[in-house]
Amino acid sequence: MAKKIITIFFILFFVFTFSCSKKKQQTDKHEINKMEAAEAIKVGPNNKICPVSGHPVNKEVFTEYKGKKYYFCCASCIEPFLKNPEKYIK
Image (cartoon, rainbow, N blue to C red):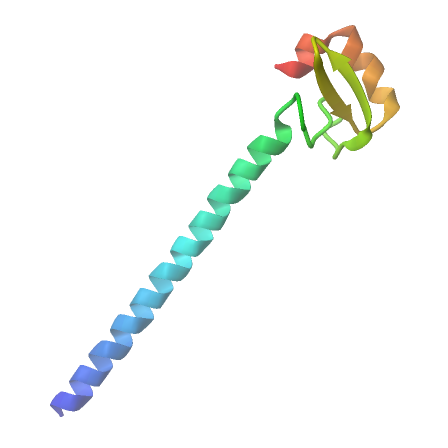
């Protein structure tokens, strides 16, 4: 009888421990995704999101402003950016 209780205790302990570590991994993954999103939105050198449209950038389409390269999804986004760059940089 005591062996059954000890066995059940260890099974429950390991199930609980595993489920907690799984939740921690999911939380960590969520934090990483939030950091990646924040980095992707960053405007300036190596921006990954077009500051005008919000679409992924094409690294061949860029302009320079105040000595920094700003990347865009397409050439048509460069003109609105150059009209008011500070609006898109903020």
